[in-house]
Length: 301
Ligand SMILES: Cc1cc2nc3c(=O)[nH]c(=O)nc-3n(C[C@H](O)[C@H](O)[C@H](O)COP(=O)(O)OP(=O)(O)OC[C@H]3O[C@@H](n4cnc5c(N)ncnc54)[C@H](O)[C@@H]3O)c2cc1C
Image (cartoon, rainbow, N blue to C red; front, side):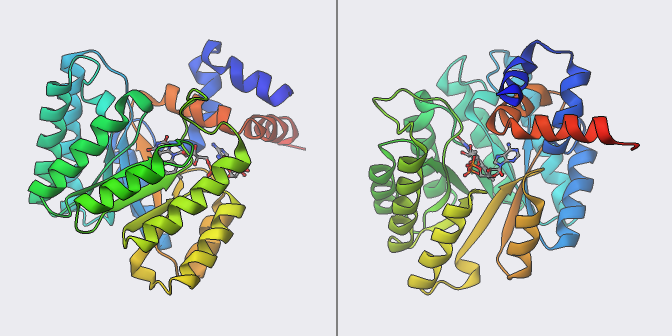
């Protein structure tokens, strides 16, 4: 309870204090930080997905800067020969202003990445953007085959229908499946851990049946074990799926999955706007705050 209280108070605390707990989740403030983190992950055998932090913007200049920063990232991925793709979010490209703006800017980035042969994942944000994100993914993957993929959230009741719709509309769907981080209303979402876990595994099985390429994005042992059983059941080869994890979370699991020979991708965020993302991550696992405080108090003993 103490940990939850501290985690919930983070938005009101000094940035430097939050940074003490949060630095594990982000590569750093600059693109160079993201490149060197990706190099380190690659040398461990993991792939990356670089994400520029800074979402929910209603500033057109910021949306334009996001386009330019992603182009710089894409240039560097190519010249530095990094094994990584990128993740992008509609609210970072101005969807709060209007859909035309975000569509124009996201298309520009995906087009630029496509020219360099680099894959783009369109992250899934909260439910007002679900239809938009799926439609954009389907449109762009038709125009630029295999250029991009999107994300589906097991917490949403609609997700199995979305899987059927997506896999009927595109040749090989490329989907990251996760639980979903956003607090959604009971009418449209399962707000019960067990139900989300059940739906996650049902969605994963459906995706495998529909021959989608899946990024299995979880650190939950129940889901990792369930995924392993499904991988066996459908006799999938190692190149037919991948696991995905967040930077700073469960490094022992990361090592285990790599040692077992699975493809593993680490979500690697960077940028000046690291605060909201880090707070979200800390609220997700308040125990981290407790163990960091313990570590801080006991260091030097
Ligand atoms: C690669 C990747 C991309 C994602 N993309 C999206 C997206 O586009 N849209 C979206 O809504 N959500 C996204 N998520 C977040 C996801 O929806 C979950 O909120 C998050 O992964 C936690 O769920 P879990 O399955 O790991 O289960 P949990 O039950 O939350 O975690 C299982 C265990 O993992 C560890 N753990 C989990 N989170 C943390 C943490 N923050 N700090 C320390 N330890 C932790 C703990 O040991 C915990 O017991 C993504 C997650 C991943 C891994």
